Image (tube, rainbow, N blue to C red; front, side, top):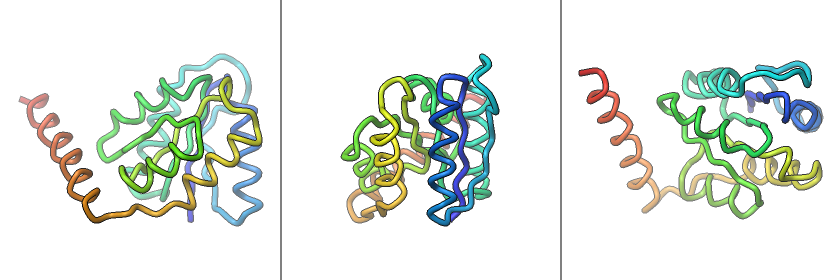
Length: 153
């Protein structure tokens, strides 16, 4: 499984630790940056990871910033991305089971290293439940397509 990962300056150190653990567990990891704790703009990295996932260059994405909020907002602007900002293992599980999220966004200022690792692990190990949730995810995709059409007019 290939994972695209990205962070801003606030998430850089946690991203590095998550990346190391994912690689040790056998995941192929595509690091989209940032590569230091120097101040950067989070939308740049959210877009890179989102495009990797939307264009099927990666199976899932992991984004890390201070809170995870801005990264999720930015990634969700990429058509085909369903990014979830989560802070608990339960939220990570539900985002996959019920929403078929394909990108997880976490906050380095919210989660310690151990909990962040568990949240990412839960996200990546949880399958989409399908069933009644499939219809709902399809409706999200329909909204996305509709809004792209409206905006392009």
